[in-house]
Amino acid sequence: MSSLQTLTLVCFPHAGGGLGRYRGWRDDLPDGVELVLPDLPGREGRLFDEPLPDVASVSQYAIHQLAAEIASSDRLAIAGISYGALVAFDMAARLEASGKKIQAVFAASQRAPTTRLPPINWRSMDDERLLAELTEIGGLSPDLGAEEEFLELFLPVIRAELHASETYLRPDAYDRLRCPIFLYHGNEDAAIPSSSARAWRDETDDFSWRSLEAAHFLTGPDGKDLWYEALREDLRFVHD
Image (cartoon, rainbow, N blue to C red):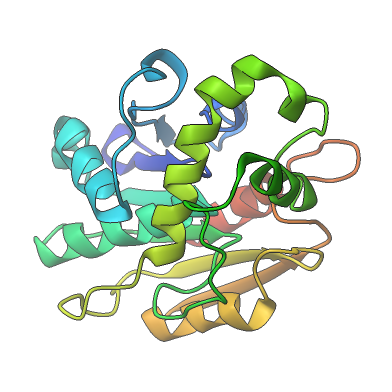
């Protein structure tokens, strides 16, 4: 790709997650793909900032924060896993409504934004049950949950963003996306049924599905990032 054809890839993490996974992609992305990562409150260097209350607030915040990158990019794609997949969708819908062309949304390990799952009520459950739920889906080492610092610093953010993920529904005012949606689902995902994930096909006319041999976070038993491997292959289909 020439500089005029650079694809800007904006990525959003799971609830309470950092951006380390995506930083690991940077040196291996295909030529002409530029990684852009939002600096969101409630994580990493902004750990002590209050997390944003809902998915719409995060996507609006990211659009404002990344305004320069968005305006200068003729080829913009957005990716997210779990909670981040809903943020990616909401951001894409807002930008398309404003007239911005989106090349693709890469969504992983999440229900479609028009479906609901049985309520878990993350906000009201006690810490012990929350830690057990996180451990079950592979988002937490059992040892880490016993650390007081983790409970104090990270659990409130995780809880708030899981609640935001659970309660998000696509606003009626949103049109279906004009861009392709690439959907990735682990066949051992204990949190998201495949039927709820496949319902993403209703959000666009151009839908692609990949089932991976993995649990919710789409990593292999050796720690290999199976989502990235699949997404990297799919980047070749993203074109004008």
